[in-house]
Length: 357
Image 1 (cartoon, rainbow, N blue to C red):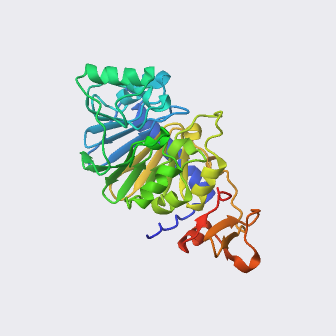
Image 2: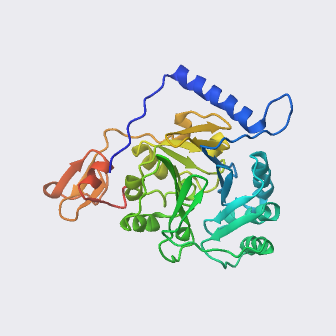
Image 3: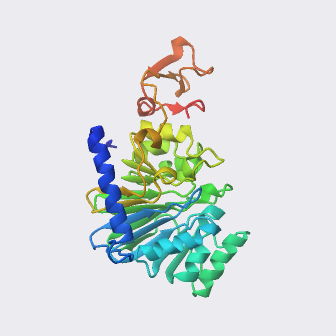
């Protein structure tokens, strides 16, 4: 699979100017002109708009294309009023698809409030039954609209305007609720987005083994940047240009973890984070994707992981497993082979030891 081209590094002055211009554009497009004081959202056809909403330690993404709208997750119960207000601000009056990737409260919680406000054509979830009040309310308000919960299958496709959406997972019924997340690929022209809910490394690896098309321009990073998601095997197939992490400020989980950020850095993905940048608005014209953010942040703030360029990895020629050079399980010198990067080791068919985060 071809790797993406390296992005040109802008000068500090140019980078600052770009941030200021984009911030001003964001305010103008999101809040309207100061003369009338009203929300004005005019979305031309021929573009796919994706808003990654700032719902803290939760998930909610709105996609609008050619007048059709899809909401993926709704944050926590307490986020419902914010999500509803955001949809109204962005000109949404009805939803073609409401998708609950899985049943955790930080994904399903706000959807009952959304369904109480907006008519929905289709309501999807990874299951139709789950024993929490948040999920029960989600089902209740869907049913009040006359909508049954639909459970998609891998390979299902549908359109949102000119965007084509493909269901990639879950591939099977997992014991871990996070692994049961609905996985969606969104193709628009030459660009693509990948939404993975809270999918972990087990389901990621099985998705890779299934042969599903995973390369994407934008990756919505799984499970808020936890160490148990966005593994190297998966990232090697996705190789995103951009990675968006929905995460709460100073959350108690330590998300995004250094392990996840380090992998994204190795993949040369530009990171966006809702805890530092607020609402993240991605726009695709079918050829490229541009971003506007509510707040600005430096690259050092967004991905502070320091990559040691001198790091080497030691492979065991017998087991075909590679390790970090400081791992106590490294093979003897006669059975060792050295690699300069994770990607080099994997390209040679080696698998990562648990010491390789």
